[in-house]
Image (cartoon, rainbow, N blue to C red; front, side, top):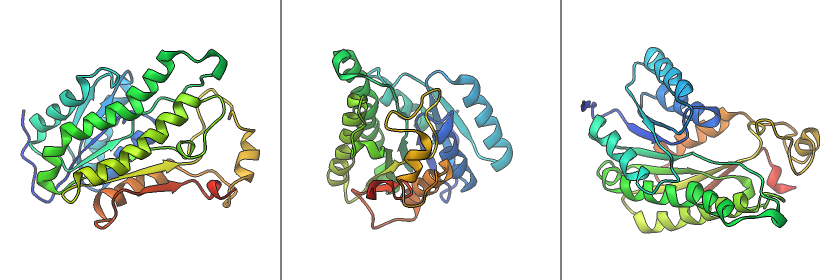
Length: 250
């Protein structure tokens, strides 16, 4: 059922939104009054719980979007589902990510292909599908990168290279889609430790010692930066905002 939103309200599609940083981004946007299309792959229960929370606490509308972004037809389908529900789209947040080790001696073509599909191909074709609708609203795209797109992480070559590709995609899209659309990225440092994995480049205390602020950040730091780029940075495009507590200066 199509929902006619008020002109002052915004509609944002967030991929990988059910858990972790994606869920915090969704909460930040909901607190600002945005209606949301929340994508998930397998985390159905978490997505449904988050949607119920956002509807209850902020009075917004939420469309849940299930899909595997490694499948070529998924981007177009997700965008169309949002348009069918809300009849507009103001923002796209390409947050979905896959963090997986791939030791160089054991590297397989499928390791590379999957990382490229999730971190480069899906954001590209989501942007393409969303572009006509975003252009109508003078909207914006924000991609979630990683500091390891600029500083490669040993043992994670496909991850690091694909995140570097996402940063290049951000700059290319900004040139392709301007002046109607702005496209930027956010590269987090340590805001959440990887689940069930120790850091591959040192112990946690040692990593935090190699940051200017000597502490980890919070997912809210990323969420606020995303919201700023979507709504409060009208002259910022083609940029990668690093939110890492000063880790990249070491």
